Image (cartoon, rainbow, N blue to C red; front, side, top):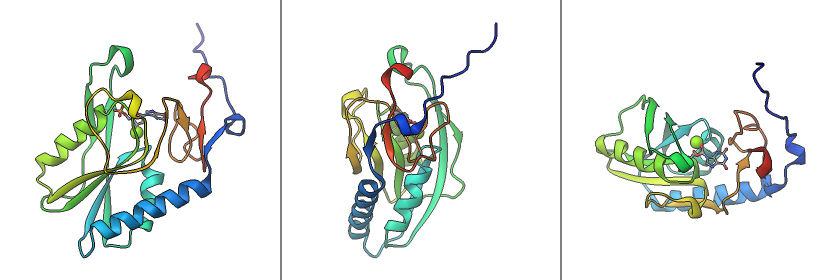
Amino acid sequence: MATPTLPFVPASSCQVLFSVEQIRERVIAIGKQISEDYKGESIVLVGVLKGAAIFLADLARAIEVDNTFDFVAVSSYGKGKTSSGAVKLIKDLDVPIEGKHVIVVEDILDTGLTLSYLRKLMLQHKPASLKIATCLDKPERRLVPIEADYVCFKIPNRFVIGYGMDYAEKYRNVADIRLFPEDKV
Ligand code: XMP
Ligand code: MG
């Protein structure tokens, strides 16, 4: 049997949830907040590939205090109804974070499984401090108790694309954040 192909949904047909301007405003506000919270310090931003890459690129430039960045990548299995909660690291840090002020940067905090796994992992490296910044937060979906320290937007339980976020690896380059039609997910 032929492999079924995904129906192509043009991004232009998806409803805009947050415009480029709204995203920019929030990222700048979070960048300012971080700059105040870490005045006189250096920070390491740890982005979670691939979804957080674009948010991290904007956030790093909105932060006025000295900062460097690194990336990790994880894969998760059996999320949703059959959740095993298993998250696996597929790309580790390149640079040691011991004694450093670390902010993990995510695209979406959803069930919380990914970030609670990463938080535990990062703490094993003994950073001076550890915080979490996420572009979006879906609090309704939480399976484990974890909150982000910096959140651009809280959203209801809807699937979104754009600004780094994908559906089957597509739409990451869409500049704004859009709702993906429920019946296509
Ligand atoms: P947790 O472990 O918190 O995982 O459930 C968060 C990760 O799930 C992905 N995710 C989404 N990706 N649109 C996306 O493109 C969404 O609406 C969405 N909700 C969750 C995302 O990779 C995030 O890092
Ligand atoms: Mg992600």
